Image (cartoon, rainbow, N blue to C red; front, side):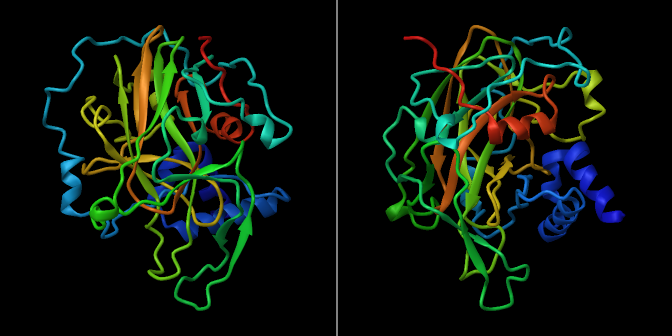
Length: 337
């Protein structure tokens, strides 16, 4: 009973902030709920690690300074008082794919947001891949519950969406600088509806057989360029969120900031910022109708796999809606050239 209650709270009340809890407890709760519901296939859930690994060195501060610098902050406030409340608002249903290959409609110069959501395959960047590789191969995932018990039990899955996924194979940015190539991936997004959009990723990480740790191979850098503010929440919606989920300025959103979250057991829907604050904030942007934005992903940790990206309006979709569409909806359309 406790496991069921904990799981429901994780999925429906705190969602992705469940990453703050122990990963194995979360996985056990997830397994129990799936058994109860007699589901044959596992569902994605957020398993972002707290990421206090030694990869987060003092050198990270060059890319993740404290939030005291106000020189990069937007001054024109955007008021969101006319937004729909979180519950009871139904958006038009998105087109779902019957075959995962049909999810990928190809590269776009600019992706078009519709009804408060934009989804795009990682491989459909307009950039050269550099030290990112496109693969459709099976991915090795962990079966073992205890990393200290050898040999580790693994299996392979083939569960990506679209043509494939991108895997960063460059050197780790602060420890292997001789082999580090940032290899920025650029995506353009045109917004039709003003709103507070949260960034999510569908990702997986390689099984770390040597270090026997949960918190490696699970991050990249992200930044957003354009006319936007830090994300805001309507008063009506705040009761379903938790405190300390948003940054108080655009400072960490406009610069390259560490973005982490992945599982080594399944493709996870996840993502939080590591901005060297007292908490791990969400990446939420107040995007404005009629504006076009440039979203850039840069390599940080090798063996990090990215399947697809999503930005969704927190005031228009529940966590369950978001996860369903991330797994089953076709890619957003291109803006006509």
